[in-house]
Amino acid sequence: MMALPLLVLAIGAAILQVGAVPAAFAQPLAAPVLPVALLAAWAAIRRPREAWLAPLGAAAVLGAVSEGRVGLFLLALLPALALATLARLRERRGEGTAVRRLGLAALAGASGTVCYVLFLAVASGTAAAVTSALPALLGGMAWTGLIAALLAAMLWRVRTDSGGLFA
Image (cartoon, rainbow, N blue to C red; front, side, top):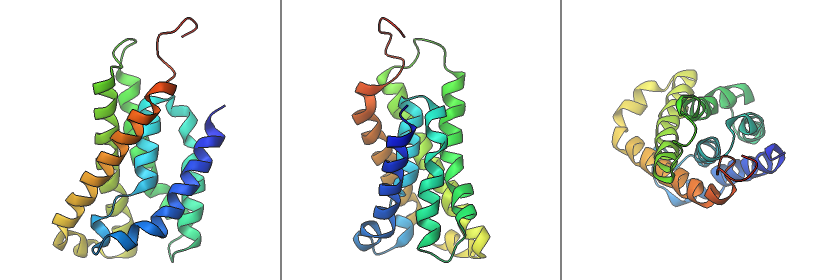
């Protein structure tokens, strides 16, 4: 069962998200959302059902160190996972090429970033500030999509539908 290692990775990504990532970017919206990238990459490469426990761990860390509630962070993280899962459900056996899956991870990461930011902005009453910082948000989307694609490329060797003997 790979849900436990992913949970540990998600907690680590959340710790990096609140610690090291903000220090590297002057504008918070320009920073990548590491838990979103990890969830998008995992759901694009591995079985999406393995990833549904991981947002709980990441949300617990993010909620514990901020003023937001854990439930808000959980709801903000779920769209990236849901988008990757829906795309995986639509693909037929044998369609999961590397380019398609890496693209799926990047798109789920970028669109998951928008959902994450917009959900938290609406919940905190600062949605107007997001529209004024749209270029920074586009940068954050690009960074998160790129990181999701890189993580998916690293996970490619452990994909579950490689077509092996027992696939």
